[in-house]
Every structure is written in structure tokens, then in C-alpha cells.
Image 1: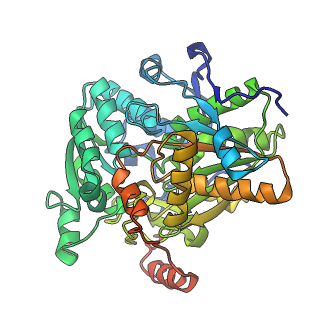
Image 2 (image 1 turned 45 degrees about the horizontal axis):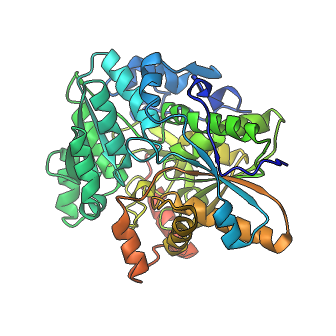
Length: 460
């Protein structure tokens, strides 16, 4: 137990990690491969070259334990990294808990979230390969903002399809993307065949990440100088985010603390993986033994109530088949305020780790999450984005359990972004106008059963 009572633990710039960590090297068993939907065979590099540069394709499949971060990427990272680790003394006092709560704060980045950790290397590798434009989707707007920022650093154009529910409710996210140089469309849109098909069937569709992915992929596939960039789910994205956990390990070591519980919000999985994977490495090596817990929205509970099966990553069925926890690629979640968590599936890598029993998962309703977010803002002075309020809700619940038992547990979470552009959501909560969106067990069981009938068949 540390005798140092610090509120903030910082690393010097020279202490910033210079390698990303690849958990594929250390897993007891490898995850199932991606499959080509036409052949049922594992996809090869040639199948992905229409969307990604070879450097990222190699990172997607490599089993090397570490990947060096290019100097050009490190130079941009230094605009905000290393990010601070805080101890939540005031939150602890408000809860009356003996638990020690730490949070790694990624809201200090130019985009206000953890997303530039991967947008910057993705833009770099694409520019290096001669690509001129990147397309992408965005839910809450944090990923689109991050990619627009990263493209500006390396002279690329950026075109973003923003989920309609988020586009309408978060206009300042769109303006921030446009300020960085991005071109933004609401999704579904009339600009793509995928969007037009959705609008023809559902003119008032609120959109989904799956639909927006379809639109961005469709446009990228039509040009040799345009590629697609994804903000979560894929292995190389999770790889880039591990700089979060690598820094947190070094910061906790400075104050002689070891986490008993690691909590992260999960939509596609990049924030959760970025924080937890380096600690999971230490756990697998027997150097520590934290419980690692993913927290997802009750309105889109892919880990806790989805099925583990091969499915498309997008609504139109344009991506490779990935074995993951899924609610079905055509599942449209309720338009909750945590737009970044409204994804029908979970990262195949995180799904595999969950199936292997290495992590836990729980689902939270948004009223409980915003309650935790308001408490956190009033004690710690940071208004959290709606997404990490899910992890904060579980952190608060665990801290209160420690209060009941007297256990001095060390809890680590990732505050993956600030909520300065999400204040209308807080306004709805404070005015008592917010409602919970969730599914009863029977409802989600029926929805998943129906989705199973529409899952793609595996050829051969």
C-alpha cells in the first residue's frame, strides 16, 4: 500500500512508451480468424488492401509482442501525452469508501478523448502509402473529430458519416470536425447505395454505427486513393490504444499501487482494451491479479446478452465475417446519449478474451450512468462524456460495496473523454427528461433469436 497521497501522477515526456503492446502474443489460444463472406476462408492481406494500407494490415495479424511507434506518430502524441493519472480523493470522500479510486484521463487530447491514439497512426500509415483521403463513421462524434484532426496533421482529406441521432443532437461535434477540415454527412444518407436502401425502408431511421460503417466503406472501396479508417473493433485499433494502459502501469508503479479491479466502458472495445490489455499481460504472467470488468449500455448489451457468432461488422454486409458477441448486424439500438457505445457487436479480440473467462462484463442503464457522471463532475471537477459514465457507474457501485465490507480495494478506470460537447444530454438528465433505454431479458432473447436467423451462413 502506498504511503504517498497524490492527486495527480504524471510521467515526464521521456517516460512515454515508445511501443504498443500486442496481446495476441500472450493469449493462451488465438482468436478465430476473419472469414471472407464469399468463400468462408480466412481473409488474406489482398482481401483488405482495398480499405487499409499494408502497415495496418500487418499490425492486424502480427503476433509480435510489441510494435514500435513511428517517430512521426510520437511527435504528434507529444501534443498531449503522457496523459495524467488522477486519484479521485474527493469522489472517495463523497462516497465514504475505503476504496482507492484512480482514473486515467484521456480528455486532454486535442479531440477531447482517447481516439487520437489510433487516428494519428492510421492517418500516418495511410499518408505514407500515398492515400489522399480517409472515410469513416462516427457515433458520438469523438472518432470523427479525432480522424479529422489526424488527417490535418498529415495532409489528408477526411469524410465522415455521423449517425443521424448523434448528428442531430450534437451539432458542435460536427462543427469541431469541420473546423479540423472534415466533411460530415448524417447517416443514413442519400450519398450511398447502403444509405438510400435504409432510408427507403425507414425514412426516419436514427441511424447506427453499422449503417454509417457501410456508407464509409462503400465510398472508400470506389477509389484507389481513398481508404477507410475504423475507430474501434479491429486488432490494430486496440493495439494503438494500449499506450493508455502502458502509461498507467508506469504511473501506478511510481506510487507503489497495484489495481484490484480495472473497469472500462465498452462499445466496440478500443478504450477498454487500451486500458486493460497491458494489465492483462501482467496478470497472465502472474505479476498481478486484478479483476477486469467491461461495462456496456443496457440498451446495446452485446457482451452480456448477445450471441457469440460470425457476423458482419456493418449493416449492409460489406465487411469480412468476424466472430464476435453480436446482437445482429441489422440491430438498431435505441438512440441513447452514449452514441459511441451504440454498436451491434463487440471487438472480436475482446469477445474471444471474454469467452476465455479472462474478463467480466456488466450492463448499465443510462440514468444510473448520468447520476455517476454528475457526482463525478461535482467532486472531481471534470464533466465526463456519456460513454465513460458507464465505467464510473460501476466504479461507484464497487466503491459502495467496499464501504459495506470495509475492503480497501484499489480501483482503476479510464475516463476516456470529457463531455463538454455533450451538455444537452446532461440538461435532459438534470431536467428529469431522460429515460432508461434497456431490454428485458425476454425481449433481448427474442431479438437475438430473430437476429440469429439473419446471421450470414459460412460457405463450405
